[in-house]
Amino acid sequence: MIQDVQETKKTPHGPVSVIELARLLGVSHATVSFVLNGKAKKYKISDATAERVMAAAKKHNCIPNHHARNLRSRKSGVLGVLVTRLTMDWAETLMQGIQQVIDDTEYVPFIATHQFDTERNRKELRSALERRDEGLVVFPLPDCEDLYHSISSAGVPLVLIGEELPGLESISSVVWDSEKAAAAAVQHLVDLGRKRIAFLGIDYPGLGTLHRFKAYCQTLKNNGLELRQEWISRISVTRRDDHVTRVVNNWFTGDPQDAPDAVFALNDVLGLSLMTELTVRGMSVPEDVAVIGLGDLPLSRYPAIGLSTVAEPIKAMGVEAARLILDLISGKADLPQRRVLQSAEVIARSSTIGAKWQIPRTGLGVL
Image 1 (tube, rainbow, N blue to C red):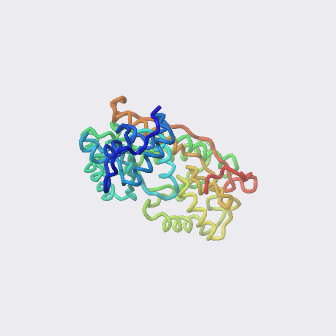
Image 2 (spheres, rainbow, N blue to C red):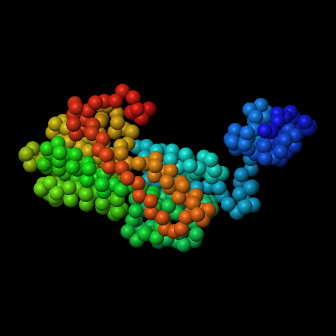
Image 3 (cartoon, one colour):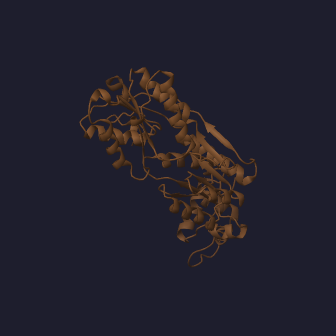
């Protein structure tokens, strides 16, 4: 136990370093460093000592000089995280998992987005290399395979998160077995008696995306249902709303008996967009059309929405990605590593079962 201390040296003027603050208080450099880095309890530093260190640090404008330390060690202490967007809570949930692991380390995350834009993606990856990020967790984009291989070949630990691309098998990844989830989602529609089931996807060549479509086709076949090409639509990842409007117009103009009575959406984002368009069109969900997605985003749980779905283990992927990137940095893991998480339980809500959905009073996770 480190004893309480008082300022024992002459007070300097202006900002002080950690070493100077330690001399001022008559304690070790380590004590001051542990307190300023939020590790007082871990190293059993008394509350009184921690409070005195923090008060003195504030008074003398003392900030740990991590940058100088990292320059000396040739390490940045930064883990780069490059995702698609910061909307719809996917990235936030992922970061909860990542930070759960790295909060007890010296590493800090640097979060950026590529917006499904190839040039932006390349720019962010180059910036990560210039920052000397010690590891990268990346949602991959096509047409950047050469850069991913270059980063990996240069010895920078790299983990693909959420999706995989053909040709990148030599790079570590953490993914969800969404093929099983997709099969369960489509089977849920079949079990409810829906026979004209459409597919709403995105124009993206990821293996997970391809596997979800494969599961849709196979589940229809297994149940003796017709696979109609006109009910298969893939929309742009950059112009989602406009394209969903066109899809709805194409599917539901004409004889209602020759239109889909259910839609399997590749993810919750598409499912939510589809429900909005159907409502604007004056159609009822699920009476006219049942809708199910994949992901279980927080917005899907709102009682006014109630999108049926299968939960993606997003936070667990973040935890696994953080553990893997740290293992790669330390040399504890061999290349490549492919870690697959399982989750295929359907969460039935009002978009497929209507009033039968028992709205939970707690645990909505949306506020």
